[in-house]
Every structure is written in structure tokens, then in C-alpha cells.
Image (cartoon, rainbow over all chains, first blue to last red; front, side):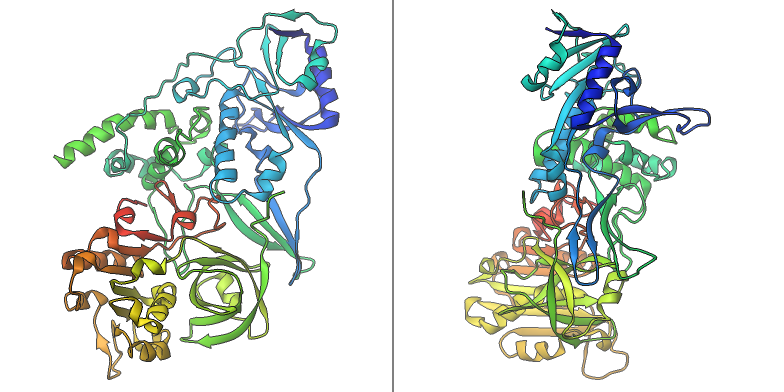
Length: 338
Length: 264
């Protein structure tokens, strides 16, 4: 059961919430697309529900709300470092089920793999989630096979059907917002149970697949631009960077910026050494991180099947296709061993 | 709120020891717990951070042997006694010295790889009774590249020490050859129970561990140290991940039985 709202009523409620929260949601950036005369859907701060785009997939994930692309950790002078401030306001993020499952992966890396990350934690403690229901999967989605098509740890969920908004509110403190002047109704499902794109991760998958020939194909096809990493809701890597101000070279910032395991320089060590020089090796590294290594360490796959990397790749490399090639690759490796 | 792990503390440079034109040891004030093989993120604001392994441990002092090869280390070399560096750490597992007690121990290191094992060698050279025997083989490119010269003389009084160079550049009195050439000549009685530590460039570690296995050492008794670019040191930044391990958390010291399964 839930509540039925007109677009106007929903928009007003979100506008009200935006006074108490910094609200992040997928919104339209006109003419911001990768091709001329196209828009792009990305995350940004909103101040009314009408700004939220329900019918299209966002090209970038919600991740920026928790992990900004560039984040200042310290301001420094020569002998002093001052921790960066952050906005002391709670955050509300609208996101789909795949992304809400991705939050769990971010939590695992940033809160449980080693010491807690101070900068992640201070935002995470103030964040609430609003689920965007998916009446239909998008073309490249494969959440069902990744087991991430459902989530229940949201404060309220909203699904749009024929211009009407249906809300499932779990958070008691927000219920009054939605229930005022409306009757409880049966609401449409918030989750999909089938996707057009399917994947199969072979049970016998192990690191030996690294010697399969399929990876060599990506030496040429992949141009190591890193877009797949940057669009991924579960990619967590960053690089530390110090910068100083041009006006005063003795004062500056220590920042962290998103990093990509596909881009040159990621594995460079002092003195000129580096690992995984070929793009195919990097593709293998990324793939196995998403569907094998992370699972070996934490018990579930890292990839949540949002399909954004497929949508964004300028070389039309499909990650779901890579996953589906792994069975054959394992067979090739096993036969080579015989 | 949790502790901000990224916050660095200032540590005073107590002494700078020049080994070669490119390699100095910075003796830093540090009073906390630390193990050989662990590392610190050393930084100078506006130049950045670099992971540096501990090359010596004394009361209130740790040694950082630094090779001048990049933006941060170039700037560190401009610092003198009495000035300070920012540090955070220590990170990584380090060598557990008790693992080697009562054993025949062989340590083989190449070039800057001598730094992370120096405190181990030092410990057992000072306490020769706690191991059955210790053999240390160290290789450098040329006599000009040799680190810790005075230590080698001291260590050779209580341990079997071999110092070798790839090319003596015409200088007399040096062993010439790769460290691997000395493996067949090792005086180890029971290789199956002996322990080994191997640290150096990737190719050196590969051939040295192969030589040790051939000699009869067991995979689980050989330990190596991985070099990676650790940006955070606390399992977040991803730069040091190999398979399902994070070198900064699970390493940098790995047994060969674990390390051989890791593929970059």
C-alpha cells in the first residue's frame, strides 16, 4: 500500500524536502550530451520534484553525492594542515535499486576495508535514500541477473505511472508529508523482475581466466578513456593530489580525485615501473574486480548491472557481453591446460 | 566521528645519511609501534605523498631510505636535519620477526629492496642466538649504488653476509654477479624447514624465488614484499589491488604461496 500523488503535489513535497536536505537526483542538462544537440541526464542538486527525470537512465550515478569527483581533504600552509569543512546539512538522494545496492559496495570499501574513511563517513551519516521505482528495465540493464533489482533500505520509494506518482513511504517521520489529503492505494511494483540484457557469470570462474585469448581483443578496441569507471556506481578508486594556489605558492590543498584502472598511470610506481601496460590486461583486471575478486573478498559481486558502462563506451564495448564471454574463456583455459 | 586517517603529523629529521647521489636515509623522530617492512605515507604539502618503507627502527627514531625518483622524493631531498616532513602510518603488515625464531634464515635483497629488510637483518645480527643461522645476500648494480656500507661490515661479524655487484666498474675487491648465483652455494642444512625473505625488483624476485624453490625451500616459507603505488595506505584508493588482495592492508609482505597466485 502507498500514496497516490499528482505531479504537482509530488513536486511540492520534494521542494519542501529541499529546504531540510540537499536533494540529489537525476536531472536534465540541456545540450550537455556527448553528441551535438543532445541532452544528458546526470545527478545534480534539485529544488523541486519536477526536476527529477524518471523515464531515462542517468549517464552518471549518484556516487558524486558521497564521493565528489574532486574532494578537498586538507588546506595547507607549509607546516599546517587544516581539515576541509563540509556542508552541515542532511542529504537526500533519489536513486534506482541498482544504485542503492551500489551504496552497499561503497560502504564496504570505504567503511569496512581497512579503517573507516573519515570523509565518506561524515556524509554517509547524514544521508537518506529515496528509491526511484523502475516500471520497465532499460535496454542495457542486467540487475536481475546480478541480484540487485530489489532493495528495501530506502526511506521512501516513488514510481511514476501515466503521469501519476505512487509513493511507498517507509520512514515514519516522512509519512505525514505524503499522506496529507490522500487515501492509501495499491501502488505499482517498484522493481523489475526481468531484463532484456542477461548475463551469466560462470560458477567455475577463477583467476586463471586471465590467460584466455579474449582479453587481447581489447588491446586494440579499448582506448583506455576510463569512462566505464567514471560512470560506474561501484568504482571507488581515487588518487591523492596536492595543488597550490598561483597567487600564493606557499598555500594549497590536498585533494583526492576519481581514478580509473583503465587510464595510463594508475599503477605507476616510483622510478618508472608500472603494471598492466596493455588495455586488454586492464579490461581483465576491471572485469575480474567486478565479478570475481570483490566477491572472493566480501562475498558478493561488485557489479550491480546498471549497464551505464555499456551505454557510455565510445568504442561500443559491452561489459555484459564481456561477462557472457567468460564461460567460453574458462573452457579455453581449461582445454589449454590438458 | 572516526579518526581522520589522512591527517599527517610532522616529524623532525634527526639526521640525513647520504649513501649515493640518489639514495639518502632520513632518520625521523617517531615514537610509536612499527614493524620492519611496514611503510609510511611521507609528504610535503604541495608536492604530495609517497609510500616509503621503514629501513631501520630504534628507540624514538625510524629510518626512511629514500630514492630520489619523483616529484615528492625530489623535494624531500631538499630537506635537511632539523627540518620536518609530514608522515602518516605505519601501514601494511610488516615482517613478524618471531616467525623466524629458531630457523635457518636466508635474506636476499636487490638494490633499494635492501631497505625494507635492513631492520630484519639488523635485529638478527644483533641477536644471533634467536635464529639457527642467518645468511644475507645483497646485490647492487655497481659499487656506487651500495647502500648501508658500514652496516655490512658490522653484520658480517655475526651473520653470513655476501655483497655482490652486477658490474664493479673496474674497482677491485667486489663479488661480481647476480644474487641468484649464490643460491646453490647456500649453507642451509634443512631447506624444507628454512625460511627466506626476498625483496627487490620484480625480475630479481622471480628468479630468486625460483632458485630457492629449486634448492628445496618451501613456498610457504618464502616471503616477498610487493612494491605498489599506495595512495591511501588504508584500502580505499585501489591503486595497490591485485586479485582479491590490497597490498597496503594484506601486504606488502606475502608468502610465496599466496603471492604466486596474484596476477597483475
